[in-house]
Amino acid sequence: MNNIERNHIFQLFSLLFNILFKNIIFFVLGFNYLFKKFDVYESLIIILICLVSILVISFISWYNCFFYLKESSIVLKKGVFSITKREIPFEKVNTVDISQNIIQKIFNLSQIKIDTGTVKTSKSELSLLLKSYRAKELKNLLLNNEINSDELEKNNNIFKLNSKDLLIYSLTSNTILNGIGIIFILYNFVDDYINNILDIDLFSKLNITNFSFIKIIFGLLFILSISVILAIIKSFIKYYNFKVFVEKNKLNISYGLFNKKNYSFQINKIKGLHIKQNLTMQLFNLRTIEIESIGYGDEDDEKAILFPIINLNSQKEIINNLMPFFNFRGNIYKSEKPALFRFIFKKLVFVSLIISVSIYFSQYGYFSILLIPISLILGYMQYKNSAVGISNDLVFMSRNGFNKVQSIVKLNAAQSFEISYSYFQRLKGLCNLNTNIFSNNFGNNIKVSNLNYNLVNKIINKTNLN
Image (cartoon, rainbow, N blue to C red):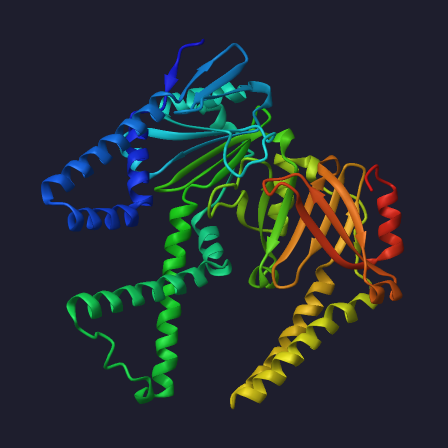
């Protein structure tokens, strides 16, 4: 205990690289100015001084960042000109995340992130780069989570994502759209690179007016096929060897091929679950389950996944086995028939304006009439998907149309309930329920629209929140 430990020396080189990469434009412009203003020898001296200064500051920043362990807490000190010290008791630790990208894997290093859920920031309270074995030791110490591999193999409550599930996830999630985006990015890159650097117009002979309808259809199918393949590859790389299990009252989630993720956190500190379904998933009764817990899902392009793709029966099995306290057994109240008009009317008014403008300004504006059935379907789906319910310790909220979300949140995690309504909603006896919960988004507001006012008011009055 109290032995000082620092980030691995690789962190210093990573820090230098980030400084240079993030300021590359500034450096290029600065170097260009120097070589115009001074001779080569003077310019090189100035550049050398700047680089040495950056190196010295980075070294001081790395050296001054260290941590040590006390009997029941971890202490971190860091800073260059202003030193800060933070002490985190083990019992306050909410989430411990161990990740490893492909470069860190080569050097057998791991990034460990520690969150308590008490500091309102989008970043981790403590992040360290250590040898992989040391990162695992620290995680086990913080969470008292030493797992025996033999016991783990006997654990029947390990839920894994197999190849079939990954394939279904790729085909039903929005990753296909990402694949199409990648294709167009590559197209623009190749086109610009060859045109500007090699002075060859690769696509000049592609005159779409000479294409037959069949050729265009085959071209679109080709693009769709490539995007599907890219989506499958992306999903397999991201969620490779995905598994989730509970051991010693800790929820453990791990996945990833090149960028490995390993999350462990106190299961009793999970605030809620979000069951999400896009349009395709609703058609095939599939869903993604995400967790509401501070410290998990707070990185860029990261979701707090409990399970990427699952059907209704498997969802019940996972919740019953891993976290039965989120098994909602209260009454669920859906939107009533008067709400259907409210969901559809505003959309029709908005679409009518778009159609009128489109027809007036464009000869192809009549195609915008297709927006009418789309808005009708969206409004009906929002009506069907809107519901609320409260039990002794949970609140259930369902909302949205094409992207349905069902949230099951602990009642004590709800900071407030708010009822709002417009004049026309009040005439129909309707209202909106706004529930504010403390989460990664710090004040995440969940809104369910066009519910029965008397029913919602009666439900809210049964709670201690208002």
